Image 1: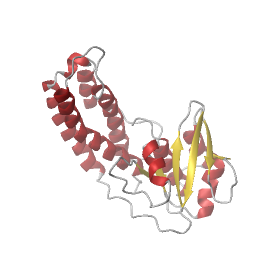
Image 2: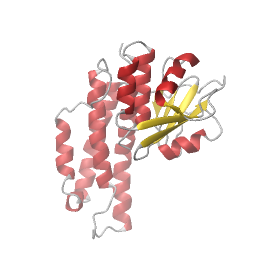
Image 3: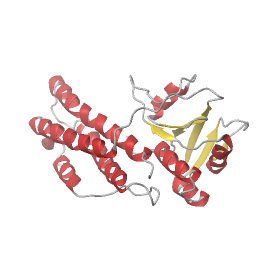
Length: 244
């Protein structure tokens, strides 16, 4: 849960559709060093480049796309379309508009997107997103609670880099690669969430040779769950923030 091409698509396409950035700048930010192909766009029999799909969004009347990060048991924000929920759950993300939903499948050289046209069906109301200040505070609380529990589990013995990663959160490091006018607090929240995701990756794995019994693993997973939820909510709120 570290790379969010659907988040980048949501934030940059929204900025372009609102006239806050140029087409070239948005496309450069979205593609980077990878080729992007989109299948399933209305009226297109085969795959088209992401640039063509971006242009089609305006023709469809889209005004904004939102990042949705579905997890098993929580697919709020996804329209009820055949095949969409399984694809979005497998990808862990989707960019949801009023006319189309786009789900990425990253590859080593090509990112393949699947478009799910809504065909006039009303999309679900977007999930209620916490304010940036609220999700920032939730991150602080979740980090504090998880850190205390992980100390009790002696996680540093398994992964000695974890304490340093947690301490590093006090240093502001805004997330790069977002539109120039994006909310500074959103940049800060996303940067922290991305670093916390790295902590989650380390904490959720057992070091080679570590003696971790079932009870310890269950306690660790229980400690990480609120932090994982807070990271997920923070990422969604940060990418979906729109400048006032």
